[in-house]
Length: 113
Image (cartoon, rainbow, N blue to C red):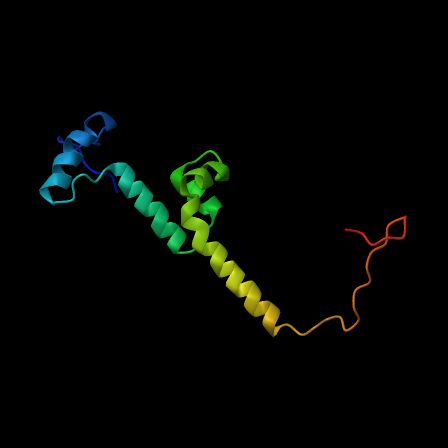
């Protein structure tokens, strides 16, 4: 949904902040900026389980690397969740190999490092 301009037409970038800032001040949220809203949208998307690629597309970043450069801290909890799930899977998995895995030998006959 587009925010209407003063004459009812589209709100242009050139006059957006002249209307946005006073509105934010009137409702007591100053110094909220449009960029703060963008960051909030990214945070909510990550909290909802969005991947880096989904957030990249949502924000219009050129690459996922750019998204991670800006929002990497939002994905830290995701790594903890992955580690927890991997640990649970490892604990519940049945051993697949009863025999110790042999040490790989090099041409010199010594164990590989």
